[in-house]
Amino acid sequence: MSDSNEPQANQTVTDVSVCIIGAGPVGATLACRLAREGIPVAIVDRAALPQMENPEFDGRAYAIAAGSKNLLEEAGVWEHLPQIACPIEDILVTDGRPGEPPSPMSLEFTREDASQPFGWMAEARALRVALNATLHNASNITVLAPADVTIARSEDGVTVRAKDGRVVHARLLIAADGRASRTRSQAGIPITKLPYGQSGIVCAITHEFPHDNGALEHFLPGGPFAQLPMTGTAEHPNLSAVVWSEKDATAQRLAALPDHAFKRELQRRIGDRLGEVTPVGRRWVYPLSAQYAQHYTATRLALTGDAAHGIHPIAGQGLNLGFRDVIVLSALLIEAHRKGEDPGSPALLTRYQRQCRPTNMLMFAATDALDRLFSNDNPVLRLARDVGIATVNRMPRLRKAFVRHAMGI
Ligand SMILES: Cc1cc2nc3c(=O)[nH]c(=O)nc-3n(C[C@H](O)[C@H](O)[C@H](O)COP(=O)(O)OP(=O)(O)OC[C@H]3O[C@@H](n4cnc5c(N)ncnc54)[C@H](O)[C@@H]3O)c2cc1C
Image (cartoon, rainbow, N blue to C red; front, side, top):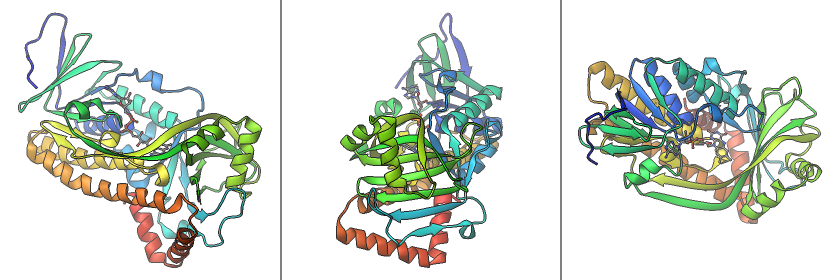
């Protein structure tokens, strides 16, 4: 981890407090949040940022919890969203089998359970446009993208060198380079991985009736099926996102069906609450697994977002968990900046790990248990979960506690 700090010919050298590897939603939001407080930041991505702004509607969307929305506002990103995110004001949780009506025992979270929406649905490409606009508006953010870099960390600081000669010196390195984080593996931080044998089919649908800002989480033997309300367009006024988990082979088979057959399978799962449904845009298939890093820090390094933890999308919380890392880490870094303290000190990194990892492990365990409990057709478990669903439904205080946790408030 040693490196020569002597500049060579054709080098541009930038000195910053924090260098972030990965300009995905987690890394880019952290950069914008820190820059707003006057902290000089560099951000590196192997891909070009405009390339991530897919101009076509592609059906992928994020459920953004209230705590995450506050963060995006504080980071100056929310105001750049090119369209209004759709509030989620009602969530219906049901259990059943494809082609059959859901079990009569359901759980419904309504407007009365919370003082504000449960979350907001934002298209992935809209968030990308907003992140890029905010990154490029900030004078104290140095963007290296596309860039292929080598990294050297020592007790004293971090040097990041791009192949084109650009060099960044920083006091702290943040890994935000996703699940297969090279920064994490180069630091020798081990991960524990749990495969699910499931894949998530992600697509958008139009429907006959308005969604009234309502979401559905329907538990089926192959895995959970979620319909999430989206802001309509002139072409598709009634629009929703679908995240649908199935065993790997089934997911591949279903996603490859012709439109009319895929539409029939969607309808068999969603029922008739939204009338006739029609798939629009692309279909995506993501193999699902969960993983967690054994620790979040090393010398002058902190892991964030999917580089630190990946969870089952059953509760739509993966990105929200990454945003919680950003909330904690940015608060610590802003405090250190105001006091003139070292942003990469072992004390700060210890506090970061202590404040984030236990909460993240709880969410990891909860989403893992939910998937194992619900993604099967065992009659005993079916009865247990139906009773559980009905019990929570009858207990308003417990319902509200669930809601507060999922909203990140
Ligand atoms: C089917 C599915 C549905 C989901 N739905 C939701 C949802 O509704 N709500 C929610 O909160 N979460 C959801 N998630 C989870 C969410 O997508 C992730 O948690 C989120 O994308 C993580 O963001 P990130 O910035 O940490 O990583 P990524 O989004 O993976 O970004 C990593 C970035 O690092 C860059 N990079 C990678 N390697 C390098 C390198 N060596 N050098 C430089 N740059 C590099 C990449 O180009 C990329 O830009 C879902 C996930 C799946 C699979």
